[in-house]
Image (tube, rainbow, N blue to C red; front, side, top):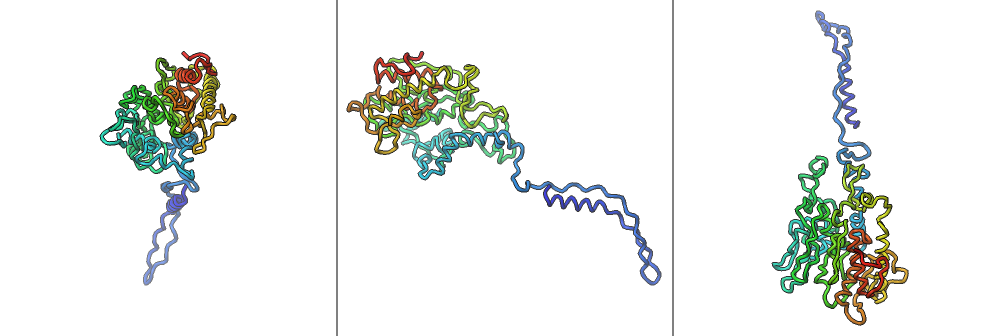
Length: 442
């Protein structure tokens, strides 16, 4: 008990233990009477009420029990999130000697995904565009639009005021004064933190790839429920249909799809698809969403989804019983072998580097197949046979970067990814046997 509360209670107790005073003695003639003997001691009075509770605990902060689950407990949402790549990337940027300030610069495109309020502004339709042009499917996640003068793909720009790039609770959840427990004092309940992006079954995700070079319309990839919000940012950020032309120059190490383009692969429509070939979908795309594997319910945290976003093998076992890794039937190993074969071919032509500035040295023998395919960058100015890349050759390089940066080694959509790799290698080595894929996946 707080020391002040103890003092109050003790004073009340003493007051309750004192008996009534005896009667006053009679006054004698000519002077005051002699005081009579003291009266008998009265019975003990009832104990007074306890003092008011203190406002804190000495030596530490007081956290109401209602805050521990599901958020602030030792295995709660907050600690899970702090182990995620979203959080560690934020910390790395904050302490960096050269922080990525461009990620939140108004007038640039980066903040649409990297700023804490990026999704909020996109949902509200508040992005920057040129003239009277607008993004046709902004409410479904698309970011590109046709420039008014040329119709060429142009990225919508961030218009917010964030100063540090951070993906946080309020990036994905629509938190307001009315539902924020820190302001209302009302504990969290299921559904009280709605998602920023519509997940009620009425929305669809549009990825950047358009059916034709113009207009820039994107492609309706379907509705993935609570995974829709993930796909708004985990995308290529370029429209491959108009990005790759009849002849292609590598202009910078940033040529090709952006990092983390999982939506393009999972939906099975975002790669460079070769004319005359047909492409299929895996069961994953047909029955699952991002959250099914990356946010499994945590039993000891009220079954609230895991906010570390790490894929959990338990999500696979209902279909792939007995598997102890994600390498089901050796498929991830096959994709690694295929990536190494394509990487080796392009590196031999002087097209790959892990340098971010000149001189752009090609990969060493030790780096080929070392597992860091996502770190490979195209060499600016590289040419094939003395000329620019043809449309299909550029499509192969694009697909290699897309699958490498997807980071899952085929898990997101095994059939589609296998077909992209197989067809890509046939362009480089006609009738060649791609390691891992001696035949085209069906």
